[in-house]
Image 1 (tube, rainbow, N blue to C red):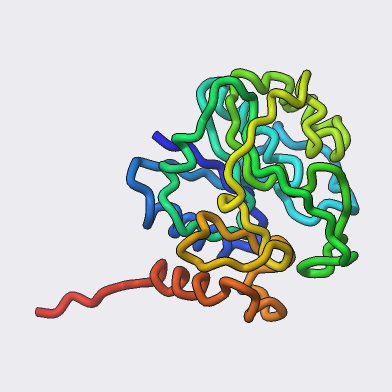
Image 2: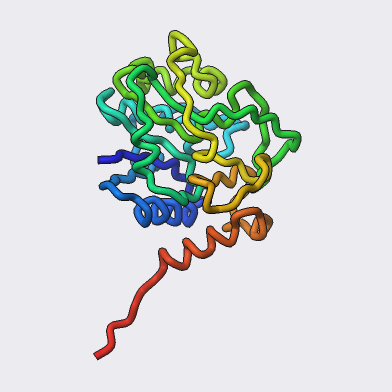
Length: 228
């Protein structure tokens, strides 16, 4: 069973559902998907919202190993994504040598704001935490107490690990950053990340890979009529 947790923000509800559909539509193995909704994390997330926090799941993502009882593997994904490949291919890349596996971007944004006027921040390892394959047993430092008290930089820069050697790498096409990475044919992309703003926001309606997103949304809403 492929276990996936997706960050949830009520301002991007449609993004969560389209992403979930895109995963299920292409998966060759059983998949479970759980939204990381703050309303379902009562007693687990109590830190005050940071002014630099652009989404509800900026920090809750790091509760995934705890929610899995520090057992087995799980995948975290931001909700502003679109999967165009079989998730089983990513799942097969799990490597027990590592505590977490990510796309190791060298992401240095020049803009100061992103979607809905959220502040854009710069830090080492930016966007590494937007797709994470967790080897949960090796992430025991991520208790609710730590996740609620550690700085955002400590969390997103993986300072909770004893060594950077515990951070493995997954192929870049599993977290292609729209607006930063050079566009490549959709058939060569496994996961599109609308990190500046998704096509569900009017301002980004014509962004790269927006056509693929709207096709997926229509497929999600499909309802065939039964004719006598």
